[in-house]
Image (cartoon, rainbow, N blue to C red; front, side, top):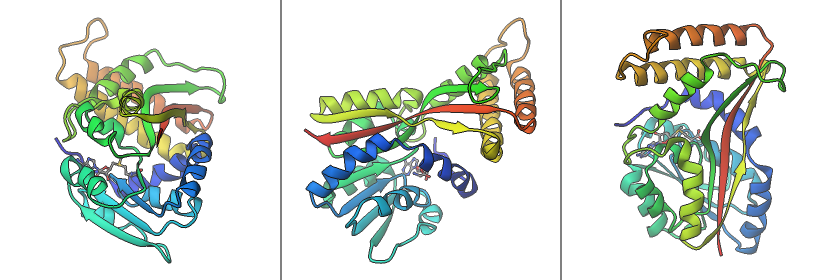
Length: 274
Ligand SMILES: C[S@@+](CC[C@H](N)C(=O)[O-])C[C@H]1O[C@@H](n2cnc3c(N)ncnc32)[C@H](O)[C@@H]1O
């Protein structure tokens, strides 16, 4: 089943993605980039080009980007910085993505917010050719009152379980790994002979990020309700979807109060040839 991504949603998350990225991953990648005199990057599942915007100023001498996505409208929004050749490849990652790595002279393969959508088999194919993968949701969600003290709702765990289970549905590349993707990727890349690092890059949201937090709650509400809609009645508290709706109302009120912290776990993976 394929999923489309709203450019407004991608724009809302991009600044938080960028500020959350692991500095350690970049400090490991940068010397390898310089030492190899690398110039060519292929980015998988590029959307509107978030990775291009993040990495171009950080990887000196970059000359060629190949952006791969099945959504040509998103790709058309990606910029082409001065002095950098940008090739947009509209196609399905099931074939075009891996072929783009295998068939072209690529130094670095990247992707962000992608690995949780893919299956173990696809990831194994990727592990033959790839170096940096950024920001994969790891299944953890923690609300706090002030950025430190936990402020749990009785149904946070209930909704999180439903969301994480929904994340594992097939997105077109086989059963999605969802929150398992980071660990699985680290294992498969090591098995393929890479040095691999799995580094924490959590989104830490506060009142200044209220629009993204609201969008997350809306998305979790709809994913969890969808997941529970197919499930049998979940017991004493009644219909699962009703419970999810009530949770979402409470969490929207938390955000509207202007005093909240929300940490959404993410991991950056860096894999370099041994
Ligand atoms: C969550 S978005 C991330 C976009 C971008 N990397 C970013 O960080 O903003 C996932 C992207 O992967 C693309 N995608 C998902 N599955 C795909 C597939 N099977 N083939 C090609 N593109 C795919 C979607 O169209 C979307 O642009």
